[in-house]
Amino acid sequence: MDKLHLTDKVLEILRQANSTIQLNELSKLLHIKSDEDDYFLLREILDELVQNKLITKSSKRKYSLKEIPTNKYQGLIEISGDVGILKTNEKHPQKIIIRRRNFNTALDGDEVVVKLLAQREKKKLRGEVIKIINRSKIVFFGTIEFDGDFFFLVPDDSKYYVDFLVPRKYLKDAKIGDKVSARILHWDEPSKSPVAEIIDVLGRTGNPEAEFNSIVKDFNLITEFPDEVLQEITKIHPPQNRVYKSRRDFRNENVITIDPEDAKDFDDALSLKKLENGNFLLGIHIADVSYYVNENSNVDIEARYRGTSVYLVDRVIPMLPEKLSNEVCSLQPNKPRYTFSVIVEITENAEVINYDIAESIIINKRRFNYNEVKNIIDTKKGDLVDLILALYKLSVQLRKKRFEEGGINFNTTEYKFILDAEKFPIQVIEKESTAATQLVEEFMLLANKIVAQHIQT
Image 1 (tube, one colour):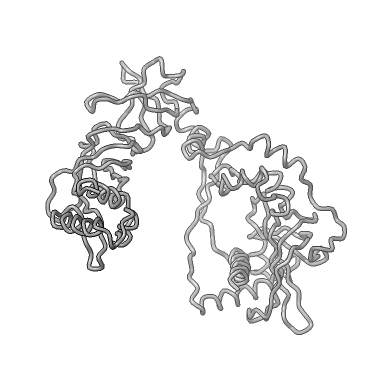
Image 2: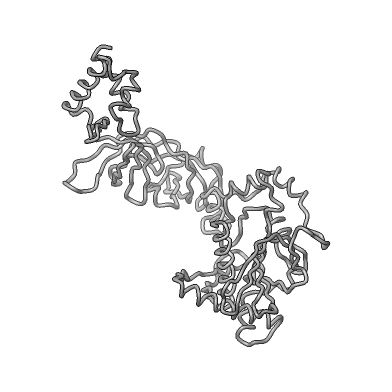
């Protein structure tokens, strides 16, 4: 093999390598044995490339291509207000700051080429956009306005730092003051306005329904379930009140739920009874959704795609169809329901003696809200008062023990918005952390801890 050809081969291998390469690895890739003349030629070439500073050699005879400094980078630009940051595609990404005056028509999410600007020593890299490779296809939201000559769109999000011209033919019947979704058509010169077209008219800006709809669309939240999912759940039915040999039966126990007053789905329940040895048998019962949702079923695939239920001020966008979350799987009062239970023998000082994790069936004997439970704890009066007080005393011991063992109090202030009939906020209420909420928290934490330890062992 001639020297020039072998040099090209060496550089090509080093260019494609993800890490440094030793001499023997390189010779194997080139199919050169150590006793051949080409092996000595290879060593000569490597020494010359190192001397010419085209490659680097480590102390362990490992070679890599020397990175040639560049002043141009390609990647996606992220914009917030008047500042953009380039996320480069290189193996060793650079963080390059771009000021608004150097955006040169780039918008958030665009793929761009950025040229580095002169900078002071040890200062952050700064650059300017010199080319738009691909425009982002992201839909954005805003309000239609009119300046006497032209219609234009004022974006809601500050990352869209300019107003967009909307020619009449692209208005789609939008009127002044309408909340709309739009996409950019073109923007060729920084001195001119970008041009956009309206995709959808959502309502009047400031109208709660229009504003909530824009949030739903902006975050690509899916409000409807596919037909195949809805068809699949028609075959799902709640359990009958009969004998189930494969499940632990708690239907004759005092099982209760404790939730916010406006809760629609009840997914956890508690039971507690005194044992002859003086300990307690605590049941923490979680709705058994997995019984109804088989792996890779249409419902399962849709739930995995959604990832979570989304709670907005005025609505819930559920991960599962409401027939499951609010009916069949919900631990509604006086109805048999399948659950997964963590059953714990525990002392009055909150020492766990042993536990079991089992499929179960329960009947919720009483649905409590937090205020009811708090009132029972405060007054020592009310339905199932002995059960509530016993649960409360045990939760206090669990909480005390948890903090003694280094538990962290993540308690933060939460707020609830009260809306009128037209969904305008009329009151803001601070959610309190009470004895009732802490009671439920401690038992859920205990269940999580036991399950985690069970999996670990």
